[in-house]
Image (tube, rainbow, N blue to C red; front, side):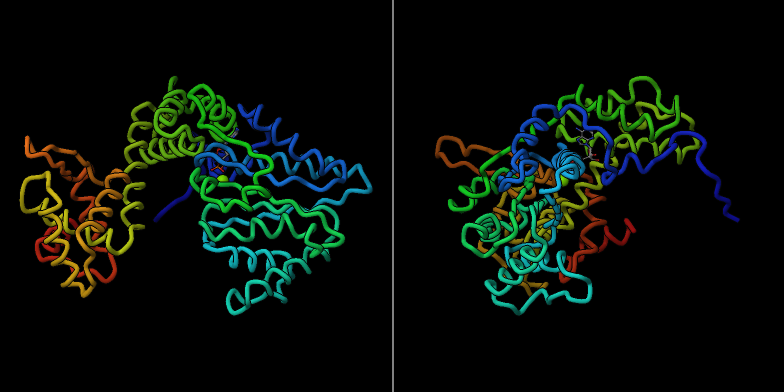
Length: 406
Ligand SMILES: Nc1ncnc2c1ncn2[C@@H]1O[C@H](COP(=O)(O)OP(=O)(O)O)[C@@H](O)[C@H]1O
Ligand SMILES: [Mg+2]
């Protein structure tokens, strides 16, 4: 029979290592906090808020810092009777257009029994519904659009909300938008009118250095782990590995959490440096696995084609070898193959994701440059993942190994 008993080593409060845990204090972001505070100052003065745009890679504290400072602002506005502040958050991860963002905002602002359908309205009608809701609330409203880069170039909403007051769509409400993006190119590709309105105040979050990550990690580990749960050097190793790779606090927390799980699973009372290295490998593997799963259909086909070649002959492979294999697999799966050039783009994507290695070669004096590809990851891992690809008929050769892997 299985018996559960509570951890008495390693984890004291493992939730504190999770991504959604909101730390009470923010470490190592003084200048960003200062800039943020300055940008929000009009709110406490009861003036029209500025629009703020935050950008920086994933895991560098954009969401945590925003939550922290907006909570502070909400507390501090309470002492002024003439300022009422409402803050609304929308995570845009699964939203791909301004229309969808607007519908979701309307539904965020409306009670549960008055939700609108996510399709079928003309765009302007949804914006009108949004203004009605916003104006009914009154006071100052800050709308945080987190992960806003998912809407791509369909960015009308980022112009609409900030301009709503000057366009007389709103009479009692002062709206401000805070846009948060992981993707630098999103900012550059915004339409010019959006750039002018949204990017009044820009705050850039740079990757953390190793000492900064260590300081963040120490604070978290203090509550999350039992005393003496780590061998000396473990926290600085987690910080160093994350600093070398991404500078992301999320990554360094994940490393410690995963390393702790390995120690716990092995019934040890301390997390060792070896656990951290093992955790890194495990996380890398699952990241690559996820990267493979999220590819488009032609990405999947290209991957299967390279896998087939890798099972039959020695890597690396040229595009002129990969392409025919790709075509055959596409045809057997009843998918129209792309032209060679387009398929090559997918190979380049696979290389960018760290799934393939790509080498450029020169064809001697006759000129001409070409690329060679081979897997940067275990074939076993690839073989396991491709069995889950929907709608692709795997070649016999690939099916044989996937059966033996399972
Ligand atoms: N300066 C910081 N101080 C304390 N914790 C932080 C800091 N920066 C990031 N974190 C923590 O790291 C994780 C990722 O941060 P997050 O704000 O979600 O990153 P982003 O939104 O930039 O992707 C969260 O668990 C967060 O609490
Ligand atoms: Mg975030």
